[in-house]
Image (cartoon, rainbow, N blue to C red; front, side, top):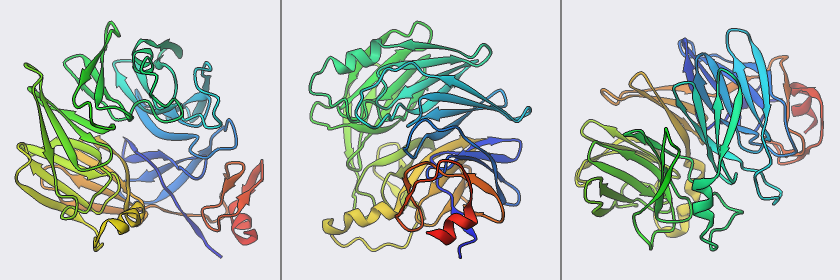
Length: 373
């Protein structure tokens, strides 16, 4: 019988020596002691339907954990000091296609949290003091005016850049970026490449915007002053990535690149000429027919906090903590001991262990669940 589960998550919020995250397979809020690496369950979360990935990312604001609703129809706020959950229902602004996929991430600005749509047909802004939610459709309407956009796929990538009082949001299906002025919420569209099928991640400097293709290790750099775009292609075989970058951040005069599906975390200089491997997994890439094997080597999102980058590595079930000053890496196992904890399993979700369907709609003892599968 198994006495642990492999926790999986997209990001981790750091607060007072604890890392807080929502598991992608179990509808559970967990916390990790960043000194000992010990993971414990905090609480089961309310669920909206039969889908997993109810909440995928956690954003910290004034010692409140704001849980980003992906396949859920409400925003959850967990007050760390009070150990209290607050539920805020969302208005229905999405396609009725069987999968919600409402939001991908959230951005904190002062006391407001801006929710970045995946397939939701509006941006949402939450005032953390009043718990009031406002909806803004201008930017999404601008994107959906292109009738060739598939509303049953993600509209935005979920990655973002905040710079010069503007929120830059890459489009998932086009070579464009939506720019949202943070005060007025006025929107405009920036064209990078009409032939590009979509973007995944973005970063910037005082002079440039840098953005990555979602399907390859292709990067674009746009000068903010004259809007001139340069294109750079990195060798996918040498750097062990074929599906694009999950993240690109400014680091050491260049850029640190986390692959979406791949084995190597790399650093590249500001001209995309000199590169080095910061972290490498054991994988031999032979030809394109093997590229989907890299799915097992994916990295799920990242968090920046106190000059450190936190990245979850799927196959190894571990959290990588990268010190951005010297690229030293600490590793934390994300295996969670079951013991006698009661965990609330998402309804009608394929088991992480056997592939069978779990049909229970109640709190269940996980030891019993594992034995019965």
